[in-house]
Length: 495
Image 1 (cartoon, rainbow, N blue to C red):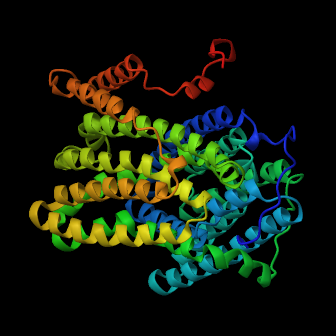
Image 2: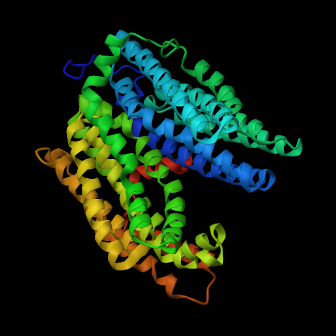
Image 3: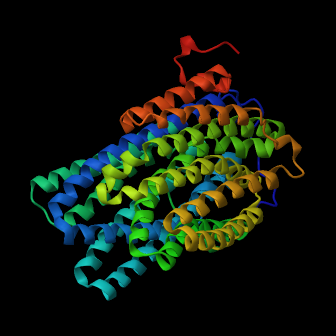
């Protein structure tokens, strides 16, 4: 379908936000809202999880986690990159082709998710028995409803209506947490807790449908000819997404095979903390993805400008996250794992470097996707897996779990640099401005100095590191001007 030139919006259409100068500030505010919503949702999730685990006890809590994990596996394996593809296509197509894309996308997600839920339910029945199979089926219903809601929300994301997306995401978490509290009070057992995700997704699905009903048809399409038209050109990207789901988990498997159980425990705790944070680069850069897609279609120079600005913001945020994890790793490990996991702190600090690089790599990944560079993305994913396998294997044999973390960070940084080189090759207009790199490096170096103040509590060192980092960035004028979109209107600088 990508060989056909997509229909274009009439130039200068007043409601065409993606082609207007307001698109950038809107994306910045939207990305900030999505990250804030994620942070608030995480707080509710921690509270709900603490109550639930204490109430259910070890055995039922394990069954609850297993059922949700099998559901999450369905989500990961059936998305196939369709959410990102949907954002790109709905940001660039018009008229009947846009409607056909939306209905096909919804139909594919319903069918694939349903098949996945049935498959894991059968697996749970054969492997664990009837009770867990029923639990997996209930959790799977929540997965299916969430998949439908997420697919219906794609036009909101493509249209930069990210405030609504953030509100809906947070509402789902709040409803789920409230139901967990209610069931704890009622002294419920396993199955009602698994049903909380069903109720939360169903409640959020209703306002989502209301918000998009004038924008896309709400009925799914099950015309397989249209599905082939959609899936054939993105097969390489779907395979790349599947490879990406294995990327960091491969390091965990290698550590489990080559290091002892204790080293695996240290690495696993660090991996779990970082895994939760890996959603942040997608939220930050994904907010600008519809702008990338529209600019890739209409205005290559604008795409280059947008990439450069998002690169600058991602580098600043990624370096700050890495610095914060380096300074706060002992506290994070103490809170999550306790004193027995103290050796995991340096592993978490190293993993923070990989997470920081992921912020920048996300920019290149979304840029390639906006340009339909599916095969390049697939080659990068496969090469990354191979490089990770070789590097981590060698370093784990030399230095255990810490070597695994070093290998993961080294490969991620290398892939980030390689991705940038492949993106700009033959496209000089996409080359980002690199003047910010030494400024961020200086800020991170000076920002790390408070880590040497061993007499200051860890939380205080984290705050000091962040303050020094921000102060150096302000002093060197490293912050992009576009970030003033986060300020109240009266305090923004005139353009």
